[in-house]
Image (spheres, rainbow, N blue to C red):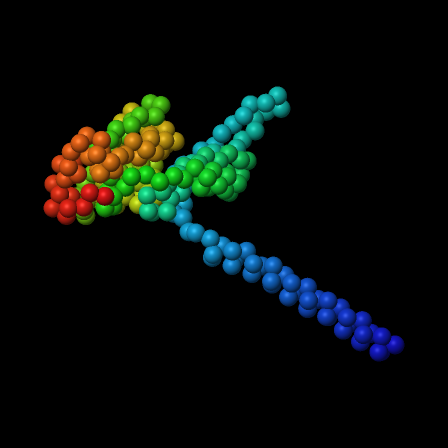
Length: 205
């Protein structure tokens, strides 16, 4: 009888050890995959509570506006809706990553002034000298910093709806044109389209 007890305990211990080892291996795999993937700058711009009126009462949920960028000229915006805040943020992040696209950004600023309107919100962007910083607030700052812009002057007009402001900023970035491309279209020299501080550097990118 004692030998049987030892065999049973030993068999259970062996299975338990393999089980624990298997759990550790399963836990390590996702961490390695996360480290191998690209890292993005993710920012939650707004989290709002929504309500749906049904026959039995109200169903409450949350809407998250998320901005994702690589700080190198690529940025995207996503909106996620769910019953819980973490789920809404996760959905918004996934949609923002799928919507990421590259925009014309050079020397940590924008190539030229631009104004864009989305809904009742209007956003004005203007290039600035090095060291100025991002003079913006709310959703405009989040989009520009995630896109890699470090020096810019901005102004937000009209509605202060955060989602519309973010959409207007993305629309303004989509209207950006590279100085060399515009110079070829107009038949001019690239230096003629550059601001004074860019002309001294002789860089038209």
